[in-house]
Amino acid sequence: MKKTLAEIAQIVNGEVVGDKNLVITGLSGIQEANEGDLTFLANPKYVSFGKKTKASAIITSRDIEIPEKSIIRTDNPSLAFTDLMSAVTEGKIPCPKGIHEAAFVAEDSVIGNNVAIGPCAIIESKVTIGDNTVIFGGSYVGPDTKIGSDCLVYPNVTLCGSVTLGDRVIVHSGTVIGSDGFGYILIDGVHKKISQVGTVVIGDDVEIGANVAIDRARFDKTVIGRGSKIDNLVQVAHNVVMGENCIIISQVGISGSVKIGNGVILAGQAGITGHITIGEGAVVYAQSAITKPVPAHAHVSGYPARPHNEAKRIHAYTQRLPQYVKAIQELEKKVEALETRLKDLGFSKEE
Image (cartoon, rainbow, N blue to C red; front, side, top):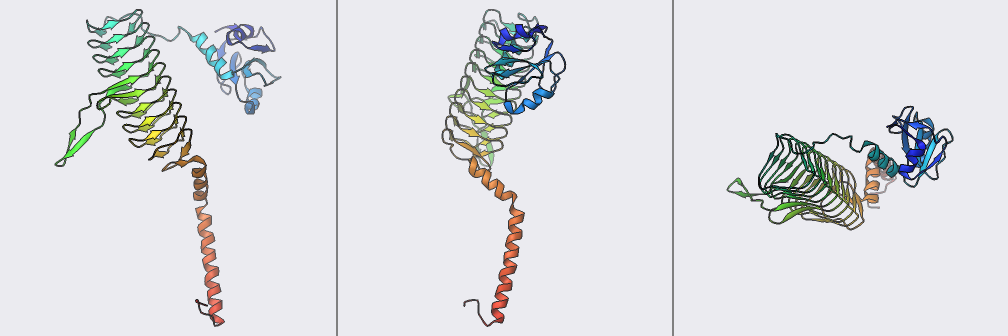
């Protein structure tokens, strides 16, 4: 990239304070930036980083001042920087063009306009793929699968048969959607497999990270709601119904038949037991174990999870256990000495 601050300000709808003709040649984080780079600063408490950065200029909020640097003031620096990044990298991410001769596409599949399918990708029978969707090489799309428009399926993704992806869905490498739910019946000491004949439905504008597993339902459907974002290494079991605009962070495990409301956040390594409900807008903190329903808009943490403020107090008390033990031991010694003194004076314990 090679743009002046004035040109960049037009892209992000910002106001330049400083040298409008300063030429920017790169984008970077505030601590990693070098001369010629543009970075961003969203939180006023990190102004000291802005003064120290080697970046030539900074995108900031409208209430931040850094006299040492040329800045572009915006309403939302993080969003502005993201929009700028998208603008300068558009078309630079290498994508397959057209249908590669080494791809397999079943004759009865329906392929939309401007679809790209990379080498060694497999598109099975009766698949439907919407306009402008890109399927990278090595991915597998099973029979009767429906993929919407403007989707991006990275290499080595597996979409098992009869699953549905909405429009503008992104699926990263190694993810499997539509694998069998984990269900068995113990008969005479042998685990007999329960058939999983349902499906998975992914809503519009969902992004699914790398190496995620989303199991098909036993009978009906596993659902990921519109606008939800799932990080890497997440397990979503059969019959889970996830609402819209949820954030599921890495290594979360969601057991079968869990109902998750809109706007829920599950932080890293949280574990959710089966057949419970997590209410709308709830936040589950990292490494929490959810063993019972979570009310709407609650913040919970701990093992087992409880209201976050209560969990913090318990954790603080736990950290002080050595002092508590020492204090109790000292009290026991004082009580023992007092009892001995009273006995010497002729008093019994009962008295």
